[in-house]
Image (tube, rainbow, N blue to C red; front, side, top):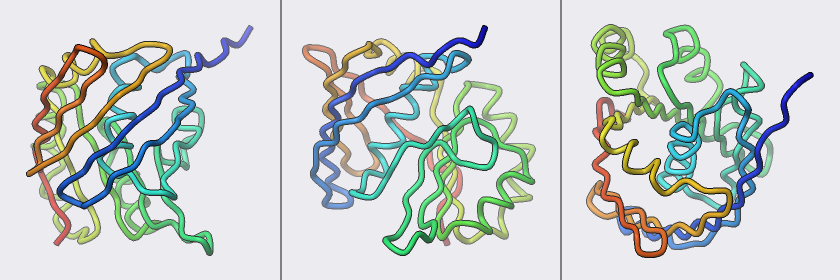
Amino acid sequence: MAQNATIHKVELSVSDMDRHYYETHKLTVAKHPSETDERMMVRILAFALNAHEHLEMTRGLSTEDEPDIWQKSLSGELEVWVALGLPGLKAVRQSCGKAGRVVVYAYGGRTAELWWEKIENSLTRFDNLEVTGLSARDTGELLKLAGRAMKLQVNIQDGEVMVSSGDSIVYLTPLTWKSVT
């Protein structure tokens, strides 16, 4: 018997001083049975870091040909493709061909660092690709805010991120491994 997704309701208030974006998003996040809470929280963080009125969560883990998050133009063109984890070179190449901007959020501690060391030189040719590393400490702290109903405030300034929920505050420092050229 197939397991159902767990539904999480998220009120996500984003104050991004770097991009001058200030908005609250009401998200219904379907957590796939094989998805960890850590990955779900990274997905919510990635949404906040790329927040836009047309940004959407996709079916994610249940489909191979879709990113975790995307943004399409009004005419249906894929503007932003956001992937989580440690995608292979072929997947990165294909996504860079499909979208105007591709963002990968790598996490997993030392495993993510080793992935980046292995793949870094193969990705230099993709001018529309950004790769951001999230430390195990940062994702572990973010995990503490996970719940079925979340009210998160995300403040972004000078590349630093503060995520708060009630009395709990987590400070994150995403590492830019590759930026758009």
